Image (cartoon, rainbow, N blue to C red):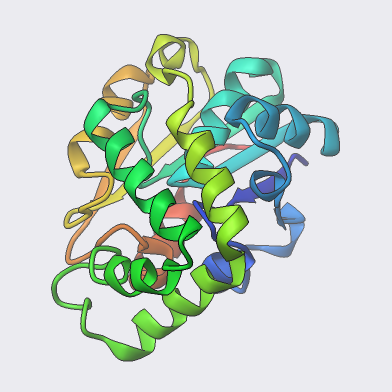
Length: 234
């Protein structure tokens, strides 16, 4: 049985998968990786993930974690038995996004990370949940735990990410592409693009859901993941 690896997004950790870890069947031997916190490039993160987990793998990555998963399937397509990409993008960095990240990095370097965290909590969720204090406080605590150095390193890794669109047409494993219909950070058209590139990919948009879909709509995410895992026939 392949091992299921969950890959967190930018500045996140196992907390973002808390509601999935309790729902996934134990026979998958699910593990949350932290390669994104230990390496400075997407390519190196994927290489480390493959080196640290032997044998066939099923990968589920959210946001930046999806970028790592797409790179891992490029590096070792024969080892990836299933792929789930949640709120991610296959595109390289745009100039506009690069400028925004550079501005954010300047805030971090000047000790203003708390200011950025407060502002980002309003764009992480759908409009209906952006004022949910329990949800946003959980999210802000998650981000603060990463710390300034991790924020900067991981943002720079995203800025230098490869163009995954070049190889997605060669993916042959069952692929789920999941996105919130109100995702402001990686809008649905980015997931639609991924699904159009991967042969046979299943695209699902979650209603009333933003970027942090594992936290905002955990039951819907769990249902989609369990259905995807059942389709792997492993």
